[in-house]
Image (cartoon, rainbow, N blue to C red; front, side, top):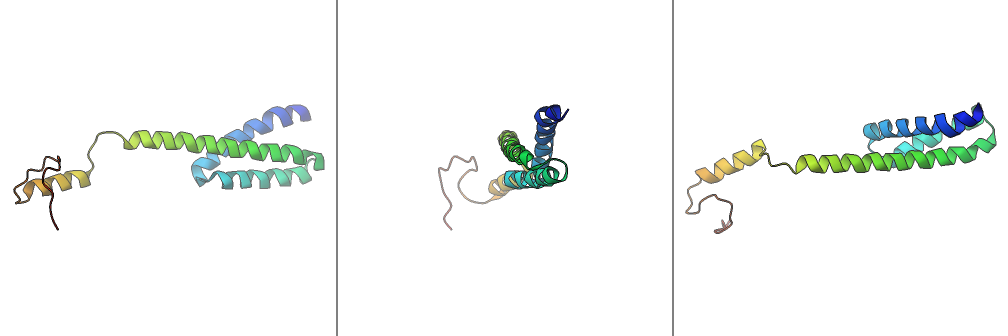
Length: 116
């Protein structure tokens, strides 16, 4: 029973909790520190000192999971920011350039530059 808990249940729980904590805390090192603190308490409350090795392994697993979740979030956020929609600030800047009374058109081709 303890073997199934150590090799299956606790690693799966560590992966799930690390992913959730990374979404909340947004810091992989903090996620690993929380996991280490929890497993350290469990080590001396429920198991004996030999479980300390598993605690270190679970902490490394939590850190790796948090880093992977952070990497995936960064990829998804980069894809969201690369779409071709104009924000309200962009449209305001375009309208201000079109309404200005200079000799350049506001095509954005940088043929004439404003001097300030």
